[in-house]
Length: 317
Image 1 (cartoon, rainbow, N blue to C red):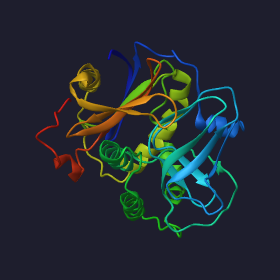
Image 2: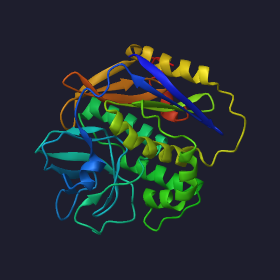
Image 3: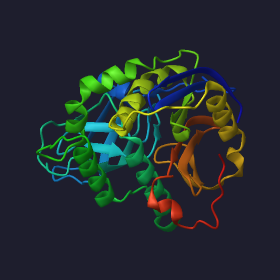
Image 4: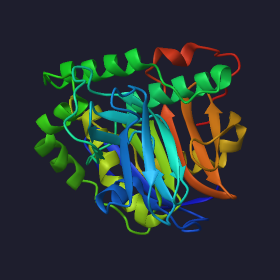
């Protein structure tokens, strides 16, 4: 996959490379958060009694609608996070596979779900993605490991010293909102980009590519806020990565992407997922009609799961 680096930014322990892929703006769709805000879709509990790991989505419009994995939906009986990226066909209804990120509430505060200004942090996304990949291989299910998600939310509360009465990830974000916004301001979006790679020191944290530059611009600050949650507590030290090194690592990552093992599965909505299987990385491509809709790569380097099946997973960066 060809990428052209368009900007490099560095602040404290974090560096962000923004880039443009050779193929972009090839498919017309809008983001799920935008569709919710414009009343083009509705996301609800599956029934009055509800189901922790499933929601109903009604697309009332003539547009394709996209949610990225890690999108957080608030309200209804409890806040949820999407387990995978989804492209929803016009005028259709689907069941969304989700995980709970608010363990201590199971009571309705609204009929429909609302959007958030952030997505789930990288570590939670990575563990969730690996769990989904394994469940797809063995059970053909986009389910994650709910207890693992709850444990991660609890860990974020501890690390960031925020005790939520309902163990809500949203409460953690809100408690550090001002600090996170100052962090995001250090990394302005490049309007020529449709993808980014984020590094802590010299280590890749995650990378995302969107088909559309406008959708990228919507999700960019959300991704940065989630990154702030992941790294804001780290102690300051010299960050020696250069723009040339970060650019090389980014280009090399995508130049060698075809070397990684993968499996192919039907998407939750339309399209299909190419699920990557590496010792250090987890992630997937969501494709529809030969268009790349979304690609995400998430680092497992600090996760003990990287030790599993080490003999058959190949390093690609």
